[in-house]
Each structure stands twice: as structure tokens, then as C-alpha cells.
Length: 351
Image (cartoon, rainbow, N blue to C red):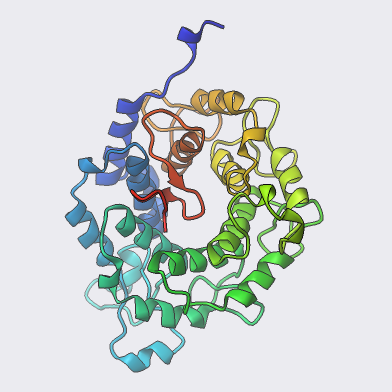
């Protein structure tokens, strides 16, 4: 095929899409209002990868993100069992009564990860946010088996929230917020017989869960970067089996699937691609085929879709498509700190 006919990344169109999403979400996102901070993370992170954070007012973004932080009324509250992180949206901060502030603190681990990631990307000094209250109260969320609940008054526990806790500690450069040994033991139990990781012990291997497990282990220092070129046999997990499972996720269409016998999906180009990158075996995938698959999901409206046949883009798959293209070395895109899921710092290290 003529190289001139190959699809290209429509940078300006994507920038307009992300700018629009950063300023105001379409009505189709109303049902996701509770995740507004996470949606903002996708938009701001996308702009960061495209090296276009100058298109947002960073002070305004910082003030908006900080408005979601929950603060204890007194130091003794940190021992109450509640988590003092960031809420996911304005509605999660208030009760059903417009005038009455809710007594229920709805801070969430995923929202806290997204808040810190945004603040870090725009250059905000994280020491200004009272990290001690986040870290001390976060220990209340860790369970006896090493897993984490995302919120203090009851929820599921799985690898997503172990990862969030590890990423929070890493970004704050303080590991007092979790018991790393217990977290490691839980992650190891989540590796399945086929090499991938399930969200909980004994569950089916999944691309997103595998990323969470591997990234958390790397952030905590239990596996090193490029472990396959070093001492894979002595690792706490079965690295050869993990590599085999991950490489098998690339499908005949060039894309990457999240589970066995599932269609290729743009987000797994990052989730599984990121795992291969962290393990040091990214060069073994067919990069050209993956690049073509991702660009086949490029929407004429800007952004990316989940599948090639879809027409309308969504913010989630758009961000992870940008992230995957960054892993592929797409010209004009900033490199990633893969284990944190954000653009790398100027010194080349994302932590």
C-alpha cells in the first residue's frame, strides 16, 4: 500500500476534542457525573501527552481539583476509619438537600489517584495538599489480605485499588500509607494459571487487572524495569508465563484484546502494551499492525473509538489510544511514565 495513503494522527482535531471535553462534557456523560474527576484526568492527561497543556489555565485546574479534597476537622479524625482523600465529583460532596452539607465523607482511592495525577502533570507542588492526612487515613482502607477498599464505608476490593494506593504513595514519595508486603502477597495470589492477572484471586486473567498488578509491583520495588533482561526467574511472579499471556493478546487485526476470545479494543493497546513495556519485551509485538489498528479507530470528530466500526469517540478510549501511541513512539507525543499512567517528568522519570 502507498505510504501516503496510510492513516495519520489528526493532531489538531484531537486537540479540539480534548479542549472541548476539558471545558464541558456533552449530555451523554451525565450518567458519569460521579466520576467527573476521572473524566478530567482523561482530558488533561490527553492534552499532556499531546504536549498541549498550555491550552488550559493550570491555576484554574489546580483550584478546581483541590476543591474536591476532604479534610479532617481535627487530627483525631484520622483514626476514625474514614479516608481523607479526594471526592469524585461535586455531587459526592453534598447530600440530597441542596443546602445541607453531607456528613458522609465520600473520598475515593481512584478519585484521589486521578486528582494527584492531574496536579502532578500541571506542575503543582504536592507537598501543599497535606499528604499526611491522605496517607494516614489510607491505611484504614487496606484489608487483612493486603487488598484495598476504595472507600471507607464498604465496597469491593480488588487489584484496581491496590494499584491506586501504590500510585498515590509513589506520587507523594511516601510509603507510610500502605503495608507493601501485604499488598505484594495479594497481587501474587491474583496471578492466574495462564500467566495473566485477575482482579481478585482465582478470577479470569484480564488486561486491565494485569497492568494494575505489574505496575503496582514495579512502583513498590518488587520487580525492576526490564525484568526480562535481568533476573526473571527469581521474580515474585511467573514472568515468562506473564510474557506469553500478554504477547498472545495481540489479535489478527493488529489490535490487542483484554481477555482470551474477545475483540481487539483500543484501551488494551495501553493496558497490555504497558505491561510489555514495563517487562522490557515491547519490541516483540507487531508495532506497525498495532499502530494501524489504533488509527483505524480515529474518529472524524477527534478522539478515538473503542472499535473501528464505531463512529463516535469517547473520552476513555481516546486517552488510552493517545497513551498507546506514545508507547509506540508516535512523533509529537510526550513519553509516558508507564507505571504511573502519566507523562514522564522532564528528568525522564515520572515519579
